[in-house]
Length: 346
Ligand SMILES: [Zn+2]
Image (cartoon, rainbow, N blue to C red; front, side):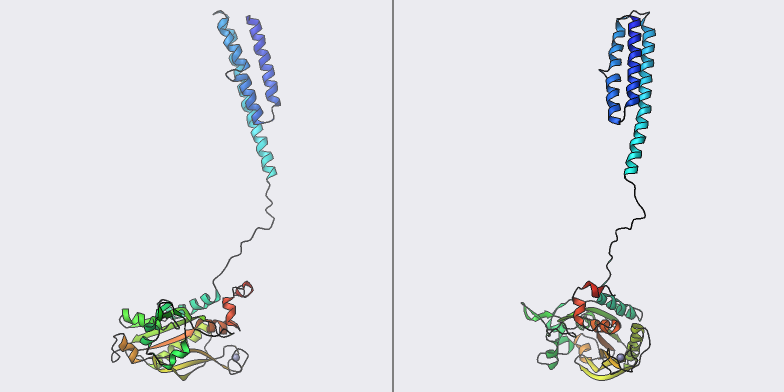
């Protein structure tokens, strides 16, 4: 090919290439053009190879033109590539518009169970009075559930606390009271002691609105020097004031528990009618809240604490019962039904 033919060929390639680049609409189409013109087997490359056939004098002028054409095509390709990228991005963004005014997809949050709530309220009140948390196993031995609590075999108090026994035998059972924790703590720690112990307990009982074979208790124990019944009354009166959010009259009626002497049932004035009588208190004006008493010296002796030096008081309350009274729940079975309509009211 002569010099003029080569120059003409280069100018033709330039015209065609620039025209096609202008019309390219996608990044992929643009890449194809780059390969067709500037690639190893591209039109321009083929022409440049022909330069070797020219004489030394002719080469520079054609070479210069060829380079200029190559740069021109390359720079147009780059400019078009940028323009296509921008328009592709713009159409992508407009197709994915987010309407921030649409309502969101809400996630329903759960909350703690009402019995856990009341259990925590009780524990927090006693924390404030210097008690600390103690926990014990739900599968217990006969010794901790009865014997160590001054309730030997054939003691009539065992009948009222019939529980569930295991395959291991009658000596391994589900605890019928959280009082078991008192004994376990007194065995390990030296007085003075102040503990509060919430947890599940079991009784082999018929199911009705007031009774369920599984329920919850919180047990309190204080052992110190010269503990009086007056201190027990003061502690529990303060608990009732904080739990119901107002001071309420209380009365202590004599009762019997094998591991306390003397023992008492604590009633408080009904927080709903303040003694006038209403449905919650069965029109009596008073609510039975919990059992309490001074720790029986036999219980202290059984764990190696000298009853001449140390004395104390203990109390036990039904968490389910207190939750029912505080929130006006009329059936204990609601707590175990997993019915969201009930649980969501807390
Ligand atoms: Zn009442």
